[in-house]
Amino acid sequence: MTFLPGLDSEELPGPITGPIVVTGTDTGVGKTIVTAAIAAAATAAGQRVAVLKPAQTGTADGDEPDAVTVARLAEPAMTRTLASFPDPLAPLAAARVAGEDALTAVMAQLAARSIAEEHDVTLIEGAGGLLVPLGEGGWTVLDLAKALDATAVVVARAGLGTLNHTALTLESLARREVPALVVFGAWPADPELVHRTNLHDLDGDLAGAIPDGAGAMAGPLFRREAPHWLDPRLYGRFDPVAFRSHSR
Ligand SMILES: Nc1ncnc2c1ncn2[C@@H]1O[C@H](COP(=O)(O)OP(=O)(O)O)[C@@H](O)[C@H]1O
Ligand SMILES: [Mg+2]
Image (cartoon, rainbow, N blue to C red; front, side):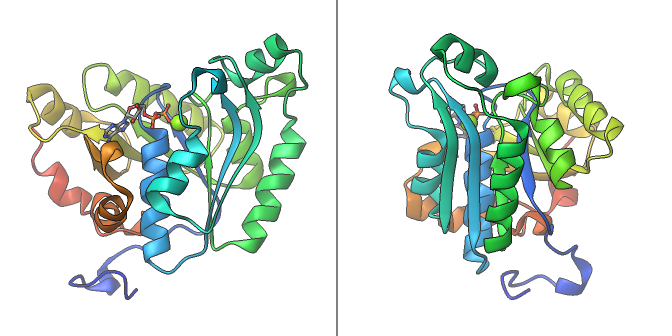
């Protein structure tokens, strides 16, 4: 693992193989920024990375679509969005309100599989949290992760409320036997008592922490820094044990 200078590669777990589904404990927790960070770290490690956003909603708001944000920050080999809807709603509701066909589970699975065949790393960003209805019949990102045999990355908030939301999300994943890692979407520069105690008590396998403010970085700086925020399973050199030692 030539991308881990300074560390003894024999002591480190290897990067995850197979698709990675990036989900979160809620909407607005930093899934897109975490997706961009993993894409940047894997690209820097020489991987051909694809990022798939099955369903993008809220396009009428004029906000940058998630795939565009990821492309700008990470410059992966490829980004693709399968379905876009104007209203800022869960994708199934957004399709219904728009009078359009919702994405089917089969379409999403076929797209993810064909992209995965052509790339070393395939990242799939959900919409909202794990159990949000994404398309026809109410399939969820949990269903997609299960169908693809993917590993889930659960993006969690750093502050108050995150212990419950993270535990609920991990319990749902475990019930379907989907392996999961946890990454903080925006870790504060000056952690307060609540952040340090959350770090101590958080369920799950911590695999990264994105510094608050990273989303506003220019692309070149973001790409240079991203490997420091993620552990070797996500193509970086973050050390969760050292990071957790700041908890109390
Ligand atoms: N590490 C971060 N630094 C700065 N801003 C962030 C960070 N993570 C998320 N944000 C901001 O928080 C908002 C929600 O993040 P986003 O990645 O879009 O969440 P999600 O994809 O989970 O809905 C965005 O405005 C984004 O720019
Ligand atoms: Mg997003």
